[in-house]
Structure formats: structure tokens, C-alpha cells
Image (tube, rainbow, N blue to C red; front, side, top):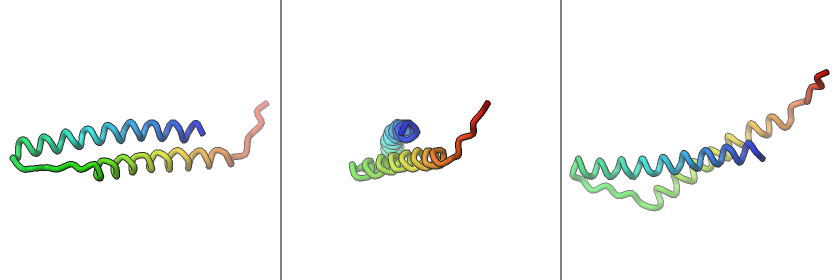
Length: 75
């Protein structure tokens, strides 16, 4: 559960950073190229959901693999 929570939190933060950079990039293109760039809430939501899904997968998969490893007794 800890791996999953960590991966999701990292991907949520990365998703937020990506959305902010994307919106800022669209604004810069709009200003310098003098064209209208529209960023919709749907595109923001889809990118954020994709980031969260990536975090869930890459948190769940290694945690599941680790859970099924045989424990070695050290002594």
C-alpha cells in the first residue's frame, strides 16, 4: 500500500507540474505567435488522469512483485 501511495502522490505532483507547464507553454505560444490557443478542461482532466493511472500502475506492479517474493531468513 505504501508503494502505491508514494507512486500516486509523485505522479499527482508531476501531473500538476505538467498541467501548469502546458498551460504556460500554450499561453507563451499564444502571445508570441499571435494565434489563439485554447486549453480545455477536458484536456487538463485527461492528462491528469493519465498521470494518475501511470502512478497507480507503476506503484501497484512492483509492490505486487515484491509481495510474492520468498523471504530469506538471515542468520
